[in-house]
Amino acid sequence: MTRAQFVMTPEQSCREAFVEASSFLEKCGVYEPHNNARLLLEHVLGVYGARYYMMQPEPFPGELRSRWEDAVTRKAAGEPAQYIIGSQEFYGLPFEVTPAVLIPRPETELLVEAVLRAADRVFASGGEAVRAVDIGTGSGAIAVTMASLRPQWQVAAGDLSADALQVAARNAAANGVQIDFREGDLLAPFAGERLDILVSNPPYIPAGDIAGLQQEVRDHEPRLALDGGPDGLAPYRIMLEQLRLLPAPPQVIGFELGMGQARDVAALLESAGRWPEIIIVPDLAGIERHVLGVRLSEQMTKM
Image (cartoon, rainbow, N blue to C red):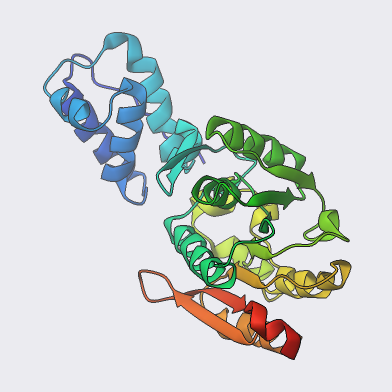
């Protein structure tokens, strides 16, 4: 299949460049063509917010034409705009993203909020420093956000991908937080250590469903961050089995998961018998997206 090449009409205003690119992306079957064209135009022009709209009637800078054509052509071929731009905002913080990491999604912000609410209940009295770990950290979005919002915590993060950990480390440095990064399979790098909070957005797509995913995800985001095994639940089962590597299970555990998986993951947590409270959290679309297990300090003696 021949790749569609975008060639900009010369002597256009920024507004006309936007309209032309939007039309081209729409004809190429790109999802949300107008939004993608705006994101790319902001990036190429290097202007955002009010300044972006003020530039709309101005002539498109000729020296940026080749960059603009390349960006729109890449988007038309299915590449995520975030990879073209090289960044994605998460919880108001900037994150570098590359093809080595999954692009942070807005629904994961709700997982962070739910874990923070639960942790504030469990550890309200303070005392020994809370140790939190983000498993399968990818870009580091969850770990960096937790460390930013709870600077008194000791935050660690793990990933099987060395390339992903390099991206996450740069994001931690850029956002001014200290995180202990470990390379390895899920909980294995933290064997023998006390963990108070475990949070994870692991791969949860059933292997057989990956071929049917949206092109941007299927062809560009790392398969390692997508493939959750035959039914999508393999990482959850493995992490719960790996709890035996720890001196004690964490008092708060929070997972993100795919559509239709919440009840199964909740059942896995209930079967483990470690958390008296099992909480299912829907996303903004009403999809059951996160499952938490919570054990208050006074409940520890009853376990």
